Length: 342
Ligand code: PHE
Image (cartoon, rainbow, N blue to C red):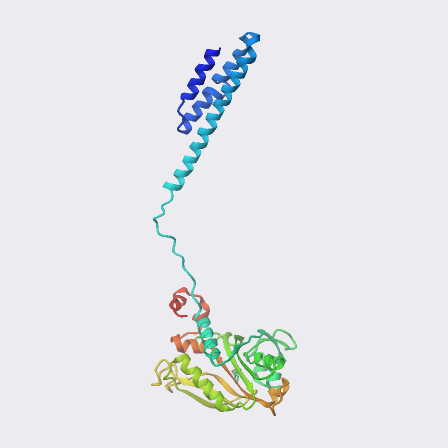
């Protein structure tokens, strides 16, 4: 019996366990319920009673050794398999999956540029809600009761009594500023506005404006002109010309529409500017004393100017985009063209 145990011990010692098949063979031959060690345990009955304890201990040692060898080999084999998976199945020299970054929308590019240009002459940025009330969109801005903008055809109303609406211009934010802050005020107010219009190459029911407001003592129309000359040259280039055309807005007096030389034909005359060489980019004027007063600013002490321009219009002129609908179609072929523009 003791000899048999030694022989099996030597066999176990010598066994080469290098792969899963050898490992399984080893398990069946030695550790399994019908294996050599189990056989030896069966033979224990024939051992003389006084030796049985001793032999039994040796058998247990043998059994533990076999199990230990098995466990170690198993661990090595599974680790090697895992290593192989990582070294052969993954090629570190392959190029990475291309990481396509998004691009800034042209309207955001222009809005940011507007903010930077006016920031350099001391204008800060203010914002207001897109859902407005009659007061901020119309009444505080001196719109008469029967003004066409107050009609269903022009404005999206959100309540039957017409007191909740989608703002039709960013001039609402002027009112909010004048109501809550004390002069001097010097702000740019960019944002989305809504008008009940059929969508075409030239018009949309959702678009963007930025409003400018400057209120202080002794602000004159000359300040307004100079500010907009500066803006036009910074935005469109130093040889851009600007002109003011007399106009009317309920909230400014006097009022003027702002034209710049047509970027497409450089003033020669083309179909975009309808042959005139000039294109309109917005409205402006001196803030009406009624508007100052209704927002709590004393028109005897303060004066100011305001202007409002369309961001789509400026973007179309700057980048020669001929159809307004391109801005909302999300066609990546269009959007990617602005990849390297900040
Ligand atoms: N709110 C006017 C518009 O939407 C533009 C404007 C703003 C005119 C400020 C004068 C002063 O057409």
